[in-house]
Image 1 (cartoon, rainbow, N blue to C red):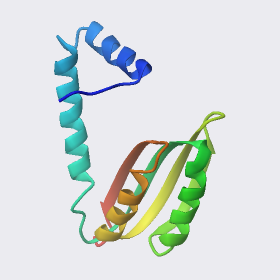
Image 2 (tube, one colour):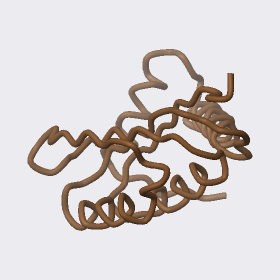
Image 3 (spheres, one colour):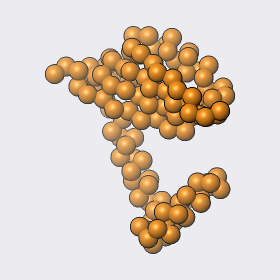
Image 4 (cartoon, rainbow, N blue to C red):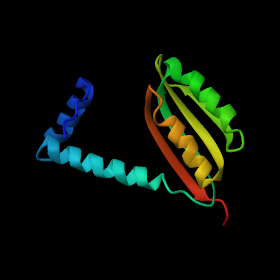
Amino acid sequence: MSVTLPPHLLSELDGVVDAGEYDSRSEATRDALRAFVTEFNRQTDLSGRLSGTVVVLYEHGGVTDEMTQLQHDFTGTIVAVHHVHLSDHLCLESIAVDGTGDRIEALLSRIRPLKGVHQVELAVVDADQ
């Protein structure tokens, strides 16, 4: 496997290794991939009625229009949106969701691949309790 990283991310990775937590880039990368896979799996195979929040960090550019379209496409699932401009090029959107696990997963699967999305986090609770 070969991975190309932007210079700033490689520098951050080297900083983690230099801090002494890991012996090598490979060890740090393996740990990061394990965390990514664990989190990804936690956000899939959702079931039942759930309520929660999807937090999205993205570049202001073309993603804004696509995020607005998602609000229209998921009106039965998205109950509120809070949009914050973090800088001249970064936005943070907090999306309150309520609906079936399948529908929330469908929303996540539309957000994750958008060009310009940096991070997607999901926190949900079982709304059937």
